[in-house]
Structure formats: C-alpha cells, structure tokens
Length: 78
Ligand SMILES: [Zn+2]
Image (cartoon, rainbow, N blue to C red; front, side, top):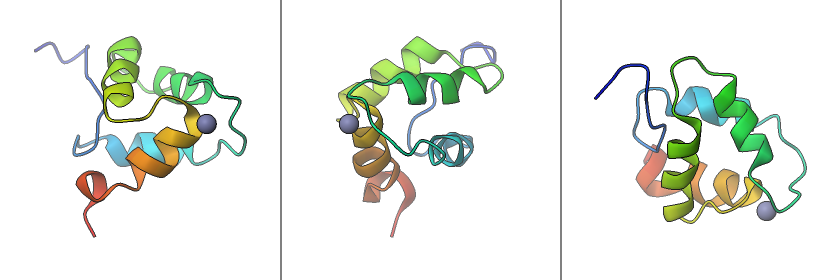
C-alpha cells in the first residue's frame, strides 16, 4: 500500500479529518461533489478510490455519506 494512495473510510485514522471537512457541506445536490472536494483537499488521498469505497457503504451522495456513513455506528462507534 502506498502512502500516497490512501482510501478514506470509517475507521481510517484520518476519517474524522474528512468528516469535519464534509461537515461544511450544507446542501446535497444528489452528487458526491462535496465529498469529492473534501477528499481532494486532503493530501495523499485516493479520491476516486475513497468515493468508490464510500458508495459501497451506502454513501452514494453527499447527504448519504454525511448521514449514513459519517454517523454510522461502524464508523465512529457509539
Ligand atoms: Zn443526498
């Protein structure tokens, strides 16, 4: 695994960094553009790979990522 190619998913050490960036996204347009730009703003992240992994977890648009993935018990723990 290359350090320049990180996949950001729940449980990743930088997941909260991504979550706090995405937290600034207030509106969902049915796309993952805000998640994409949040990831793109982080260094050494595989943006497409991360979006793919999030989509498999149910995060198919910005609000789904925020509501279902960021706040899922599997992601943060309760
Ligand atoms: Zn949405």
